[in-house]
Structures are given as structure tokens and as C-alpha cells.
Image 1 (cartoon, rainbow, N blue to C red):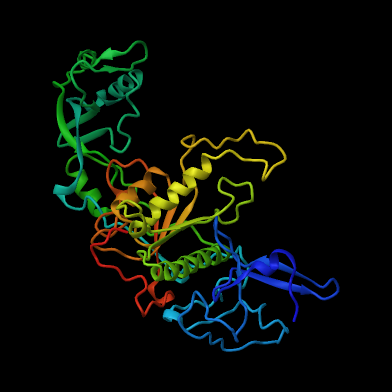
Image 2 (cartoon, rainbow, N blue to C red):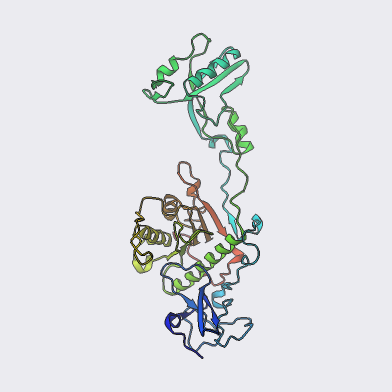
Length: 433
């Protein structure tokens, strides 16, 4: 037996340790190493071994590891591949993506999550979004070139690029001019802005043009063949389908990083439910592969505190966003540098979650989804869907709504990779997560 002097003797036991160690016999010393990223204010813990002389604080049952390879004479403290029957959660620290080339691309079908794919839009005539535009009929098709030059001269040739400029029906060509504007609106031309009515009056008078009139046309490109067919009934529309079901490629290293983050969320949910809180946990690690001087060099985690704070808005996501805001608003001190930094991290000088991934136990509610949208989060990874209250595909999907100014990825962790037979994450369907 030996007592480690210094901070090493202060590390508590956990069935889910975040720290391991190596023994240096020649110097009679121990080096402690974190086994995953540590969130702000998270306690460092090690595994004391199989034969505990006390009841573990984070377990309700006995530890039953299937094997210990070597006796290190320290009670198995160096073993971090710990298994537990606690709550039937598959909490082996074995990460299936930890082996192999970390830069290797993982095939889409073997990723540990499913991407959210919104249902096709504008695939009925009634659902097509339209806008009013001014058009003019050209009696002689030979005058089309002259009209195109007029559009270019007036800097209108790039207006409404999702539509074709000319529609031919029978023997008549109809040219798209400009979106319908309120009376008195000025339009930027090659010289000074010209009032909208005068713009129409400036049409070439020697081309036997018809009187300009307004019609509804599609307001966006066609994304699917059916949508393209329907939109063409209104006006010839550009067909620009998105790359079907193709998202950002994930490497093995990034998948391993996400695996650790999700399992950290699960472990924390177990702890806070025991403490009487709603078992919803959110976690924002540093971006995968980022250096220590990245925009978020440390991780942040928080859980739901509606019960303890007696406050209906203390959702886990709101709490973790608030933590990050406080961090960004706190000047660097001489605790990390020899002199105060010029970087005051003024809150509001940039978006809080730009380029960051948020891992959470439950699908964010509408309020939290909007907070994530305003914070410019890169992507959200959640475990349990909330069909009646979720804002990321359940009740609605905020980042795909018309008019929002940010899109973020939505990834749902595959259910068969999280064993929750005791229902740690089960909530009433009407609970806002």
C-alpha cells in the first residue's frame, strides 16, 4: 500500500472515471491522465477497484467487471474499461470508434446517429410559395435581345435568378422584368435611382410591347422533380436539387469524440435524477480537432434545474448557453497568462455557439431550439426524441422554417447504442426539454 502525496490523494472514486494513471516505479511517482475532455467545474475521479470498502456514491449496485487483466497492486485503479449493471445503461468506456485511423471517413450507414431530413416541401400546387412580378409581352421574338440589353442597362439582369427570364406560350414571348414593388420605391439603375413607375415607362417604345402587368411566380428554385413540374406551370423555374441526404463527412476520430460526449451526457443524467432534478443534460465540448487556443478551449456542461431553482426557464440548454455567455464575458486573468490579456471576450461581440456542437439527452424544446438558432450552433446531437414538444423535428423543426436566418444540423443518436431499460431518460410527452 502507498499514499500518493499532493493532489493525487484527493481524487475520489467513480464507476465512470474520467481520469486514469500510469505508475513510474523508478521515481516512485504516478502520472494522472484525463481519459476524455473535462467540463468546467467537473470533478476528476478515478476507479478505486472492484473490492470497495464503502458504497459508491454513483452506483446502486455492485460493480461486476468481466475481467481484470493484470493485478497492478493498486486495487485495479488503472483499469478504466469498467462495466456496471447500474440502471442497465451500457456504460462501458470501450469506444467502438477509438481503434483504427482517426482520419478515416465513416460510411453514412455505420455512423452512430441518424441525420434529420425534413420532408419535401412545395410538392402540391397549393404549397408553392409565390411572389408578384412585373412582366411584359413581346409580340416579335426578334426583340428579345433588345429587351435583355435593356435589363442589363438597368442592372436588372440578375434579379430573381431562380427563374428563367423568358416564357414562351404559343406565339407570344413574355419577359420577366422585376419584382412588384410598392408605389414610390426607387430602383437602382446605371445612373441615379429611378422611381419604379418611371422604370416601366422607360421601356423601349419602338418594340410594340404590351402593357406591363403583374403575375404570381415561384419565389424559390425547384428542389424536386415534382416541385419543378408544378412550378413550371406558373413560370419556367430553375431546377437545383440539393445533394440528396448528403451531410458533412465524419471521420473515425470525430465519431469517437461524439461517443465520449454522449456517454458523458448519459452518466450525468443518472446523477442528477438521483438528486431530484429533471434528468436532462446538455454538453458543449471544444470542437473536434481544435487546438487549446480555439474559440472554446474548455468544455461546458449543465443540467435542468427547474426543480431546485423553482424557475420554469432553467432548462439544461439555457443553462449551458448562459455558462458559455458568462465565460465569454469574463476577461482572461493572470491565472492563465502572465499578464492580463487584451482579449476581453465581450459578450455579444460574436455568436456564442458558432462552429460548436451541442450534445443533449433530449430533443430541445421550441424555446431552447430558438436559443440555439440565435446562438448560431453548428449542430445538435440528441438521444431521446420529444414528439409533442421538440423543436428539432418533433412538434416542429425551427431551423428549416421559412424566414429563419440560420440553419443547423440535427443528429439523433441511434437508440440501439444507448441501453436505458430502466427509463432514466423517460419523460412525460408534454415536458419541454
